[in-house]
Amino acid sequence: MIQSTILPTQCWCGIQFAIPEELKRRHDEDGYAIYCPLGHSCVRKESEAQKLRKELDGTKLALSTSELEKAYYRRKLERCEKKKTHKKK
Image (cartoon, rainbow, N blue to C red; front, side, top):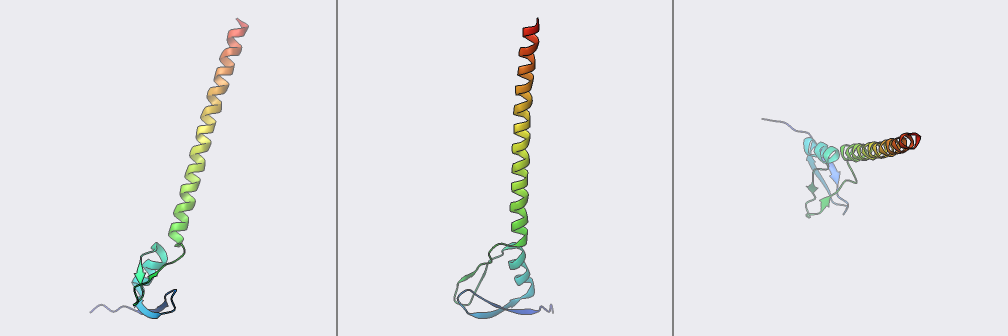
């Protein structure tokens, strides 16, 4: 028989109830949905994993934007250098 620790928790509506430790961990870490006995969704603001994913996505977007800007200015510089070379001839 598998034994699981039962943890007390409370919904935003004030109802207190108990859930298995594994379910509580999944709820806290991944935002896994749990419901109180009255059917209310017990919502966490944002899990740590979700916060880190958002931060990573933002960093990737900023890096991508920087790379695009870098490529834009590199092409612009190349065009200016070509114009400069053509004027010298």
